[in-house]
Length: 113
Image (cartoon, rainbow, N blue to C red; front, side, top):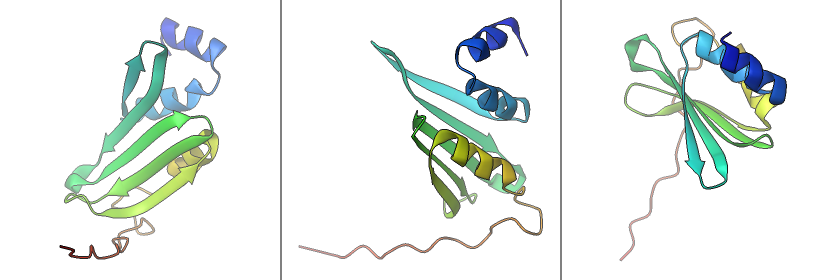
């Protein structure tokens, strides 16, 4: 952990989870406004074009997903920050036998005039 990481974790202990994810290949992009960071987007690319995604709106409003190379979702989770991070950490790599691979169905869009 770098010196800025140590300082950040001392102030916001939950950041330790993001630092751990960063250490295994995650990339994060904070969204900043006049009041500071208001969201954080994260992603991790896998071989074969798979991607894991993470959106942190707040400690009580976080979402994660895994998508195929063509953008179809095969896994999603919403909830509190720690809950979602724990489920994400338990998610097998896309090439592992127990990894989700079936595309989550979508409701067809109705054509209207």
